Length: 410
Image 1 (tube, rainbow, N blue to C red):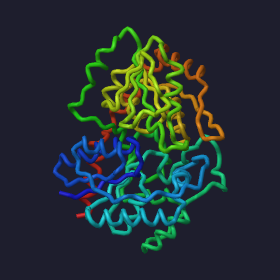
Image 2: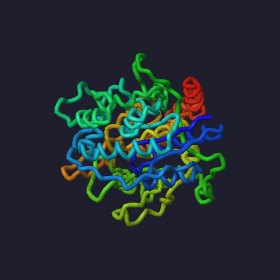
Image 3: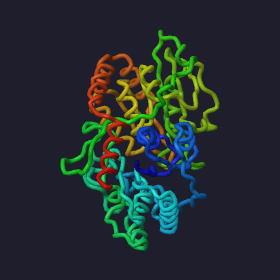
Image 4: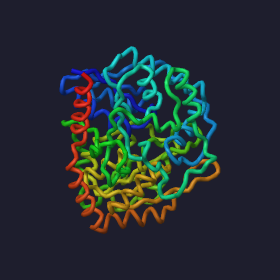
């Protein structure tokens, strides 16, 4: 039996843990030793509920955020997250090196945490990476519908190169190159997460976390079916006191303005995030739940409205549920554009004011919600896509691939 350490980008979102926990649980069920690491509030709660062992981390430093630019690709994302701060990057790498050395896994399994991937190399550990297509080094990045990454965007590659060479590793040309693991698995399909034929990656299909005994609460099940049931999931509404590029409170605000007192039930879930103080009152036709089992809720709903996170996209596609996406930055817009190209829904891109707040064309949003709810082609296409996705093995296939890789090392 092998010993696995699961790591991921440390952020207070559920997208990465909902792709990693099912794989970790599958390996644990086969007798392997598995631990998982993400100390942020919402992920830590989901990990605890999964029954997996959580690896503790010390108090993490805060980066100095200097960049605020269009998020063209993962390198630009990391610049916006403050990874241009060399002392922060060195300290985070040091912490992850200590975690890997202390746990001493046979294999590190990571999803887009450059510090953990670098730590695996420092410690000489084999690395498996679990990516969405846009995070793969061979991808065209997040804004693939436009030509050419601007040359003047902030890029933390030089910072990571200095840190890497300081630990005795080779320099990096791009931070995203760190994600080229010894085994690379892509969550999704060639249609949702396209990569060139030369990419060293294996598509494993959608992966969505839900315990086998999870059911919807009676209050949700009992909602009258004479009205459409809409599941509203905004992701993390606010990452900080001031607006950030990834905030999704605009999804809640716009849904309230467009759907209040309409002839539909709206179930708002927050993924263990607090409801922002600016949302003082929900309309009578809204129901609030901190967390619901995603696949069950998607199957029960007539429509999903969400922020465009890859995990939310996969949940809707796997369940065969139409979607309206309000993508709150470019990675999410990439997901939304690919969903619309499949024909399973529509999207509306917010504008961003000088203060950083996002605003939506509410009449356009409402019109697209009505269109997706009333035109049968969206649900018919969503069900066809769900049927095609069943050809992929998801978490079980990922675990099979990781087990075979582990066996090849012995």
